[in-house]
Image (cartoon, rainbow over all chains, first blue to last red; front, side, top):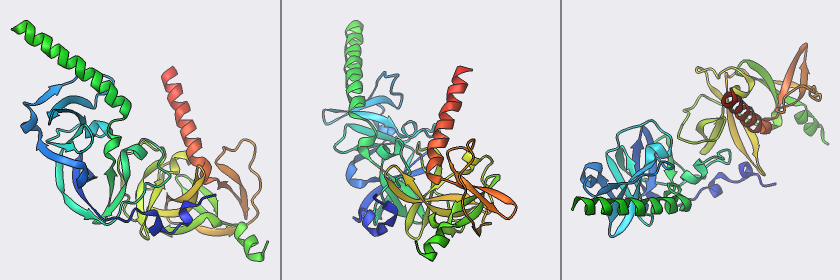
Amino acid sequence: MKSAGEQDPKSRRVRRPETVVLFFVANQMFAIAADNVQEIRSTDSLAGSASEIENPELPKVRHTIERGRRTYYVVNAGAHFSLPVTRPALVLILRQFRAALLVDRIERMADIPAVHPLPIAFTGDERRWYRGLAYLDDSVIPVVEPTGFLTPEEFQRLDRASVLAASQRETEKAVQA
Amino acid sequence: MSVTDNVRENSFVLLQIGNRRVALPAGLVAELAPPVRLHVFPHTSKLISGVIVRRGRIVPVYEAALVLGGRSSSSQRFYLIARWQTGNASDLGAIPVNGECELATGEMQPPAMDRPAYVAGTLAVGEDSFDVMNLDAFVPYYSSAADESLGAESRS
């Protein structure tokens, strides 16, 4: 039987220092690898370019934004992590994934020495949400996994809803004209 | 079996979890840690309240008091760090305790038929009798009890 506890703790870590962006959602600090973030914008600056999307099955996504001819789905991080409702002020537009993240504020960038694997006792959705845990300045901070915000099935569902919403907007424009 | 093995097998730590005083095989116990900071973050795993950092390791904290009844004391939260089994792997886990732990020796007797699955046996120390905990059964027991409770609520 494999005993995770008996292994050398050092061998269980992904010992690769990396730069992360520390951000807050509902007073909870998270980290995301700086390489995973393409752009950080204020919600105000994106107000004109965001479109609403109707998807009652996925209430954490209510808007899309267009960047470089790609549609990004805006995920409310508070809703994703089941945290209390807040008024997000910033959007983290992710690199490589068609998702953006609504967050309350950015704390700072930091170098973390390692990402510790999530203990095996954690067996729920958090295994998809987090790459692991970072220990920085006497705090344990979950390091988010960008692919964990939307599953491939959720992307498909949102793509269908997005096409429908675009077609409704076109129809409304035609009627008004 | 050596004398040392035999002594270890018959050694138990008596501790207070929630309202109950119970026993834990001493061989499973790694250490009694001081009341260090509990770090919390969003997750959906049942019975886990957060993690502590001990000797450079991140150790999950199990609210065992939820299974045994009662609440963990908010003051004097020491942590008993012990080995837990999850699936095919084992790892360390911590239980909040009030810090009053004592070592006892004795032979564990099989549990009575009506004892829950998290009771591995019974230990007699003097005139007192203690349930010996099977930590690996805590999470499945609590999950199934929570599911039953939810089911009952939805039916009523």
